[in-house]
Image (cartoon, rainbow, N blue to C red; front, side, top):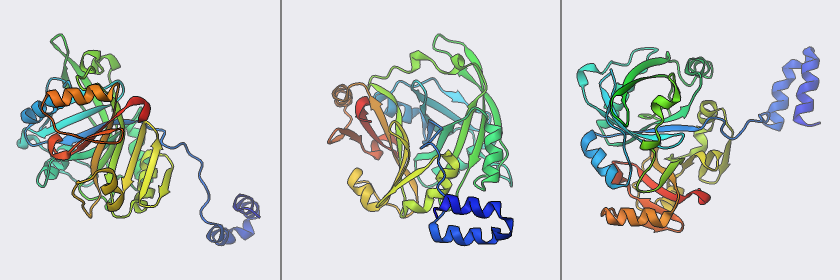
Length: 325
């Protein structure tokens, strides 16, 4: 008798329900059919100490950045915006406005301030949401985030001058097994045209979108449950790696040996961390020419152009042609 038939039979015979656990133990846990990752990558938070200097460095990398956005809780940002996701350079610019974390309330600004106490780099991974308040309820039920949703607004500088008010709702998730890192979903509560601007999406390096986030972990499989609950997707396991999502929209966890193969020379860490972002470009040769012209060093590993983390404030960047992502 297969697992599904066995559980169905026992469920119909309530007197035998105590045996369901034994059947599951024999056959393994029931397969849950879910899409690989129904939520798309929304943006990556890249924490920097000096926003002005980081902006100059990322412009040298060939990114066209938005004007500075100022948050009401002590942080400021500049974005490298693409058609449907973006990179967020973020700095703490007014410590006096940073709210403390309290039970049931995650502090976005305090998390990034604390992250910067040890390093620059990617501090948070963000997934797209259409209803962050619902996400917060689900995260609490799934025991990955007992935090109230967070609503805020700020002024966005428009390409032609002037400002528009944009508003967001966030739902946070954390895992004690990933100390110092955080995840959240982001809902934009304004007309899309106020935020997404074609003028900000044309980059000299040819970048089109973020297609993958690479993380390190001593044992990638140990983080399967959290990531499946976060993304509502199904992870695939292979020796030394875990992948969740599909080509063009996925998260990859690598153990130290697999990370060394993919990102040679990157310092390994026993703790999970965000190591690299992969970006699709229209023409990889053109990307290389732009970087060389700007004096940016990089390495070619097969069909991947790799910029080391020291050049990009703690996050390695992999550029690949769109067809190869």
